[in-house]
Amino acid sequence: MENIILHFKKEKFVWLLILYFVLVLIFGIINHRFYLPDFAVYYHASKNFIGGEQVYNQVYGTTGTGIYKYSPFVLIFFIPFTILPEIVARLIYFWVIAAGIIFIMFYLERFLMQYFSPQQIPISSQRVLFFTFLVVVVHFHRELELGNVNLLLLFILIFSLSLILRNKEIPGGILIGITILFKPHFLLLLPLLLLRKKWLTFGLVILFIIFGLILPTVMVGWQENLNLHVDWFQTMSEHNTSSRLAENPNTIHHWLYITGLKYLLPLPGLIYTYAVIVVLSLIFLLGFLRNYKIEKQIDSDIKHAHFLFEFILILAIIPNITYTDTEHFLLSLPIVMFILIIMIQQHLPKKVIWYISIIGFLMYGGNWYEVWGDKLSVWIEHNGILGMGNIIIMGCAICYLERWRLEMGNRINNKEK
Image (cartoon, rainbow, N blue to C red):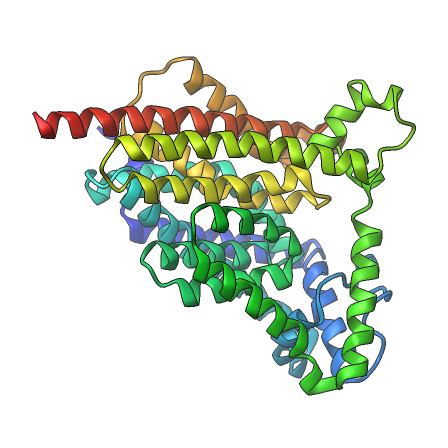
């Protein structure tokens, strides 16, 4: 008898997700943990914005631990929530994130399957959905508890990528511009757009960023908008110092620093930070040039698949090279699903890379506080296990891309014969 869990219909998977959301909500309320502290920051900062009060350098939220460090443009999206009592706004936003999880799981699965496993019948993808959820559920849970915008921004980015691949560069560029105004570390996507000659998309991103910087002027005037942006830039610079990058145990900067650089530099500065990013950029450029060379040899849609892979790989590495909280590792969801599609859909033998992938998944998504307890869970977090797992996953994804390209080449050669 086949395992029911691995072959349930999509409708049952949706109900499984809804049950999970309901349980998270109920236990959050029962345990007095339904604060959504990140959402509380957006909510109260937006209230201050429309009330003409100080937005930046203020402590917000029920837990009293949050400061607002996003652009003034972002506040506009949360103004409608301020009409409602905070508890009602929290409930609505919780279900907005929950709906986002459902949409991105199914949309991303169909999107990746279209480029990397188009020959498979739909029913076979249920295992991909289930195991992806199992790997990423810890990060989903954290997103739901905090009420952040990472999941929603990831959905926007994946949707914008699908638009660009369908030659709809204008809306694609606008959507990427929106995400950058929310979180500037998505600027890392711009060099890829230039390398892939997406001139229109690149131009629209820049234009919309400028538009987003100016837009709050309509509500508060030129001078106040300028003051808000000065406060924003100051807040970002204080939050993303080079020393903080080296202190974050999940970043590449930290690993390089503790393995030897600390004996040469008492405290890493901007030059060190930029050097790390330049080296990583050169490595990425070599990978891009290899992809470009292969595209010239194989006459197929592989160019689109390469662009897709490069896009989601950049998203995945962002938490490893910027100062962010652990919930930003949710950006690796597309890479996780890509690996599972190749592992499951192409029925790969259980070789060394297969087991390394499993280890990476466990390191990335295995820090379940309820299972390991406070002491071990904190040790896992403070020793960068999550960040290392993310790097392992990206390395495995690159290996699986090679495997997929080999299959594509063989398929094309067989057709020609």
